[in-house]
Image (cartoon, rainbow, N blue to C red):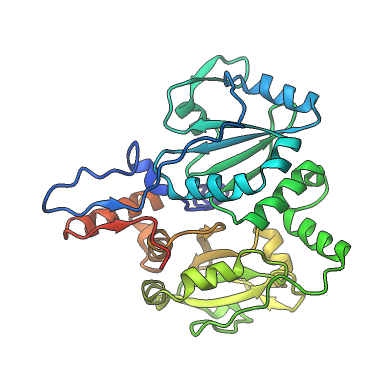
Length: 348
């Protein structure tokens, strides 16, 4: 698989179990565990009641000086429920003023019209848009062209920044991190949102070309809006720490101009490297093995998905499984076959 395709496919890991079936219910028997933690959600009544002619919806939004949002989800996805109930509802007025929102069920059978090629189902449309995880949020311009994409669960601050980024059409001239940084400077905020947090597994690395183990590189910056959540909900977990033993774990300030050496022996800086990797958000965790990116996590995950993502690379399972989803399926089956439950909503 080409590197770009692999990056797109592995860019975010949210709700990947959705693609192992039509929902989150397990066909459990008395001897098998169950998949638990899935949550049902209802599409807000203020979303547009659309006939799913995407071209028409996009044009109508543009005529009203708005952008179109496609909220692509799956019933039972805990990330979708949280995104709708907390993030969308919390920013309801801003979204209604500047966007038209349309819901797409990635397993649905409703007919969608995108172009002159004819009608396709929601499920086929999700495949055409390369939607692999839920929620996926696509922002479209008046020509129904995607201009920005969110894969997975973002917190309220991050999502509002993305809304302002799209609404102001700043996507035409800068990245979202650059926009967030510019907004912070513009408002002359007396304090940054995030102070770098310590972790007992972190190592200071300046020369990556000499590393032989898998490497987990955490990109953060002082404008990060979700870094504290990751530290509070993920990095302290015993199962995560166990998986990190397979890695050299390091953190880089994505705005730093400090000289480092990449895996190929080239001098660069964390800022240049983050740009080269096209990391659109902070935090971003990029997992390497043998100097090649094998996986990345760029949205909030719950415990089971996160530790399995680490295991996929740390255990070298990318060599034997076609993709991360196949490995996830195998890991779930391994747990379920012992009679234990898999909690996809675990946030201990």
